[in-house]
Each structure stands twice: as structure tokens, then as C-alpha cells.
Image 1 (cartoon, rainbow over the protein chains, first blue to last red):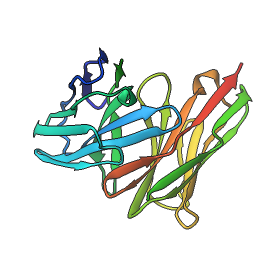
Image 2: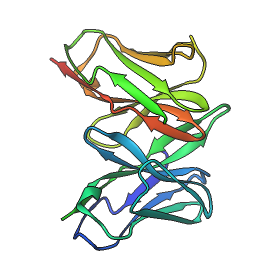
Image 3: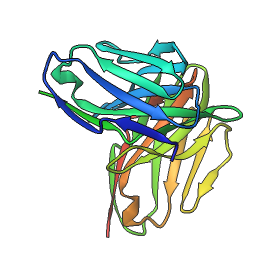
Image 4: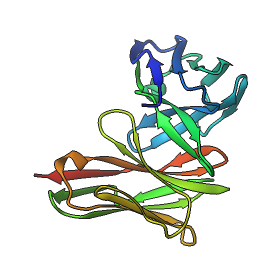
Length: 114
Length: 109
């Protein structure tokens, strides 16, 4: 258990509405990540953060924005949800080792856009 | 573009069999290869490998990395029904992971 929680755990929303997902960690890790997981695509990186107010885009960032105003919270916002954003969203933190980073995942948020 | 390819896509074996899962990668500034197990929830961390030729073991699971040929294998011996899951491989470079699409392993009692 890496002390990661995600909220909400399930959400159904309508096309065109904004949605914010929250990731909260209790271990003061510098790096945090948002992924989406879809059948046939595996886990794909949306955005990541390497410190407060420091974020960067991943492979599938279009239609998503993030914010990190505190070390413990990393927010993912879908500015105007579309059906293609129906997915399972995982947050992760990286535990820095001597030569690399092990990533640990939160429990996930299942988002359905109707 | 960074890429990780896993094979086979799916595998069905009987309890007690030994299985080998494959992972090949092409990642800029590669530093490590990670394996995860995913049942009906979040991926759980199994191994991280950074050095070629050094096997990591945890019970019936073991893994090895070949940095020259850019691949890794995950072995599971004496499989049990609880090993049924999707096994994900990920390669790390520049503090980011690139994941393969996974191998779905099904163990028949």
C-alpha cells in the first residue's frame, strides 16, 4: 500500500460536462502520474508531475489538464467530457530508488461518459 | 517513439504448469524494466530489473533482463489458479513508464 487514494471511485457524467478526478498521497512523493487504461491499449500516460506546480504532458494529454498546488494532491480535469474519455483512470506515485523509480498505483476511478 | 511489446497476448495453461512471459522494449534513456500483476483492480508491483543477467526471484516467480537484446522474461513455476491475471511489463526512461498491453494468463484447475 503506497498510501494513495482516488476520488471518486466511480462516476457517470454527461458529454460536455467538466469532470475533476482527485489523487491524494500521504508519503510526500515528488512524482505523480495519471494514466488511463482501455482494452487493447494497456496503460497510457496522460500527464505527470515532478513537483508542486511542475507538470508535463504524456502520450494522450489532449482534452485533459492537471494541477498540483500541494505535494499530496494531483488533480485531473476533463474540460468537456466526451464518450472517448470513458475509461478507468489510475493515479500513480514513484518511489525513488538508487537507480530508478518504482511506480505504485492507486485503486482507480471508473468514469463513464454518456 | 518508445515502445513495449509483450507476448503472448493470452495464455491458458493447467495448474502446475510452468509459463514464460516475454517483453521486448525500445525506450529512450532506458533505466529499468518493471513487471506488474493486475487482477480486477489496480496493477500491483512485482519486480524491477536494472542490470542485465541478474535474476530476481519471489517465490515461484522469477524474472531476468537482457539489456543487449532489449528484452525481459517473467517465469512462473508450478502455477496456481491465483496466478490468473494480466501481467504487465513497463520500461522506464526519463522518469516515465511505457507499458505493454499485457499478457492475460488463465490457469485451469
